[in-house]
Image 1 (cartoon, rainbow, N blue to C red):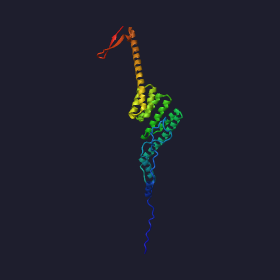
Image 2 (image 1 turned 180 degrees about the horizontal axis):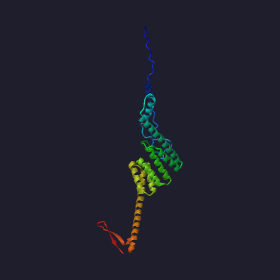
Image 3 (image 1 turned 30 degrees about the vertical axis):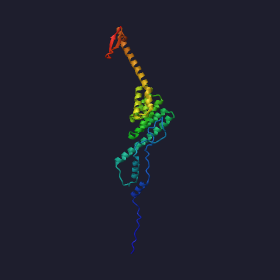
Amino acid sequence: MVLIEQANDEPAPASEIIHKKLDSEPETSSINNKDETDGFETASEGDHSDRGADFGDDDNGDDEQKQQEEKSAPLTAVKDDSYEDALDDYQLKQRALAQANEAKVEGNMLFKDGQFEDALSKYESALQVAPEMPESVELRSICHSNRGICYLKLGKYDETVKECSKAIELNPAYVKVLLRRGEAYEKLERYEEAISDMKKILEVEASNEQARRNIVRMEPLAREKAEKMKEEMIGKLKEMGNNVLGRFGMSVDNFKAVKDPNTGSYSISFQR
């Protein structure tokens, strides 16, 4: 009797096929990966095209692969409810972040067309939608910065300072915003604060010539203003003194301050 060996035509297990398929597919880049540009897009500079939301982290490719593996897992697998809730919360935040980025891009286009008031509204909408999460810090900082330059264009320098300050709270090394806030301070004749912002820039970028030139230009203005304020204060004090001394037939001019050359101290002498 001849024994016939049966050929092994049984298909490989489904899990083995799936793993082979996953191993053979090229790795796809996550939609969350940033481009190679600065990332701090401003309404006045750079490309205004929709680059998508800048999520910050680079590990989202692993999340995408996990989602593929979950889809290929047997239907009998039971997921933990807390995991489902966390996944849903993450997806909702990512969706809100994408919506905020779209509003920001719309604001950039409005700014480009000179529609500053409408651009302000779009940036505000983006800030309201953007979720409180680490990935949204950059986006929120950009929106505050862009609102600052809108107010600068509208001549509302106090509002410019407020918005730029919010952007700097989120990103203390945001050089463009420090320059912008310094410009607003100068418009308000708050020279000391403007110079302080320029010095902060040099701490971040020691080679920033614009900040260095601004300091050289504003330091004389700051001294001139300080001297003017001093004179105004002395004038007010004299006026107050004359109001009191006038009742006695005197004025502050009757009192002279004499400096002692040896000690450097002053003595007050009365003269009629």
